[in-house]
Image 1 (spheres, rainbow, N blue to C red):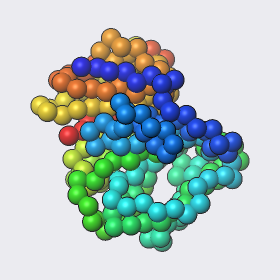
Image 2 (cartoon, rainbow, N blue to C red):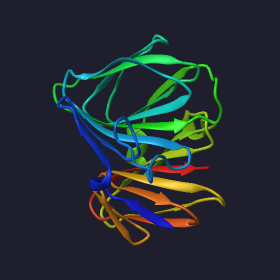
Image 3 (spheres, rainbow, N blue to C red):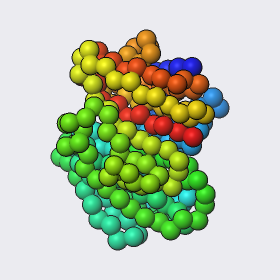
Length: 231
């Protein structure tokens, strides 16, 4: 079954310095029918004005992924990490027993990013951090493994039995993906326009995938997307 969550149906909050769209319930946005999907708890598409951002705040027992689309994001945390996340990079922060961090747009212009929360497979992990640039791999492969539970193929590691792929498709380029039995999928379209099993989707749309063995993806415009393979 393919179910499209259209961009305009997401929750929306515009704070001036932050323009944010929520695929699932978040903050003051509550939608009983869209609280989460499997272990995927949050997909927030944020646009942060240059120099603005989130001051220090805590997290615990959540796997937090940040994918920068454009601009740059400065990160500081209580583990001692002080990094800048650029387009094509993914940051993975396991909050575990507790971490405090801040995030600010270090670009003169708006920083556009996706922040994703994955529910950990258990509580009480020690906090940890990874960051990697996938832009070179993505130039050579239209579906690049970025996150996995065991870090294979030079992916980032995560405390959950899921995989995250970064995808790029040119117009009329096709790619298939096969799900194992009792696995689920979510595709978040980041840029462009594409077709997934005869469903046409655009930037900002999310696609819930259940009880499907094989999906076919075709670019209609140059398209960028994230594909989640979930338990």
